[in-house]
Image (cartoon, rainbow, N blue to C red):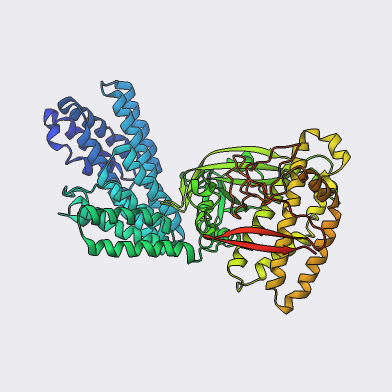
Length: 640
């Protein structure tokens, strides 16, 4: 019966002749509802009407914009009402494209492009509908909403549809307490507006308002979101823009006073408030059972506050209960990628700071610069250990190479989503001795950071400081520094790997620098440690003395090379000297050490900074200078 009715409708439509135009666009919606009925023969019979409508409008008006506009509007509504399916999407695409190709109208190119765009819209609408319900699907809904709002903006330039999905995404973020992401989402709307007095016509929520009034209201809302999300750096530019508006255009000094106080609060929060550094995770979705918007793709996720990989994995399993978690970090093979199941691979990644002047500067307070090491990031680093050659069970470091993958995503994090798709990636291999250099850079940087923190806040919980010193000095896992000495500082290694000697020289330099900073860290730790921790501190002193003794040859070499350097201290090196390294090491910022020296055999990365080296002789003393916020802290170390 339905099929017969479909042919009857088609027959009546064909008899309208030149009067068809009177039913465009009013009949687009009703005809669309008929084609969406889940009966394949009915769909095949009636889908041709849309080609006829496009051709009719094209002949009279020179385009088919009314058919296009009405079809998009009604599809968005009808698909959300649970009408249509993936079979309809495929049939719509093949049947209408076949008509365009076979009849070869003058509007062939624009018609084919429109049909392809509607097909992609159907795909996104069906994805969105599949995750419309359930708290466990909230992250999926966010991704689908993001895909739709971008589609309406870039493919069809439909401002009202674009705005509709901005509001939907904002509300989703607010329900999940994603305040920073909610702020970025509303910035999409605010960026569309100007500070003019034009009346806003697109947004029914602000009917009759001027653009400048809506933009001002949105700025206050966004600033509030950034405040709640502890992303004050993103709110400050908006506060400055409002301050300029109130001072130079509106002359509203009361509002100016309030906004400047708010701005001062943001600056104060940056320096005083605790902000945990977020963790980032690479997630690969493999298998043909996943929705199209994630199928066989990789994403970088920004973890929730204090969320570690275990909790994140559990959250993702709740969202994809049928998926199997891959325990190994090796790339999946084709059997997994092309399987009918669902497989998820999760690993930690390290953010690579963008080349920001604040990151590169040497005298920026740590509270300010550290934000940009974990935020406004687009590139990430994932390391996978790979053994090459015969493994020495007593010292695996010798053959432990690192397979390093650099991933780049489509947008900065944080952003309007908590995850973005990986768009480019490349892999390189890091030699064991080169990786040892990165590790020592990381050790030195970490200890310097702890010294700054505990010098500024001596009453802070000492456990993290104690545990880190113990992990470095009394390392049982892989032997730590002593294993580097056994692996790389031998004649055998020199003969086998002459191409790595630059890294060997650099490693010696870095170990020497790290030992000096460790000595300062131990000195500070001894002063801060309560009586109950003093026995452990004494143990660390003993182990440090043994370690220093075993590295005597390095110390001697360093002293010999330093004799040619003028023995007058140069300006102190800031504790937070950060250097952006194009090798993207996750182990350090690229600094060659707080007491960087120039070796005759190599050129160090920071060869513009020198200081008189500390010599670890009994009864000798030395002084280390650090920057803590805007104040200089001199820390005097008496060597044992």
